[in-house]
Image (tube, rainbow, N blue to C red; front, side):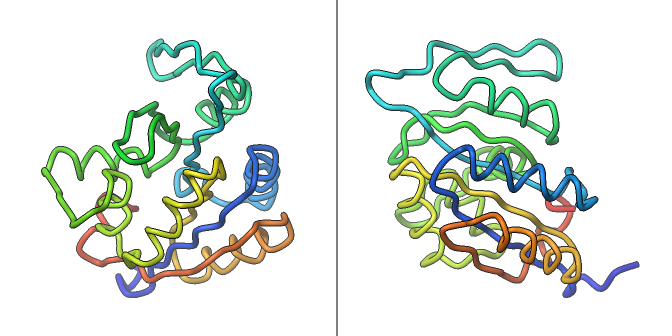
Length: 183
């Protein structure tokens, strides 16, 4: 069994869904555990609104500018959501981040000035100053790609992300008290 202190998380910021998609494909090709990968974004503009979404069993569908991108991720990653987040607007998310957001909402987590997404990220150990940076990136229609796991797994993910033209990336220690929702 792994030492709980050996858990890490890396967050990469991509300027568009094509960059995030390429990174997900590279991580999958390298054998990274897709259950430990999340994507968050809001790639739409006033003239290109999301028309709608629906969920059929465990598969969510989305119509709009990047529906094919999200549809592919929702079939590949564990968990999916389309949420209205005060301060961020409508966001789409895929992967464990969905459970972290829901846990934060169910637990009525309120962290001074942070959105539901920010509360989810702080609950797994990401510092507030980084969260503000990530929320600012989302407001600028960028995408977050989040990988978590052992230090070795996350280092491998970071190395792959470095080759996929992320605008930025940062590693963090994962909060040991929240490992049940992050593993």
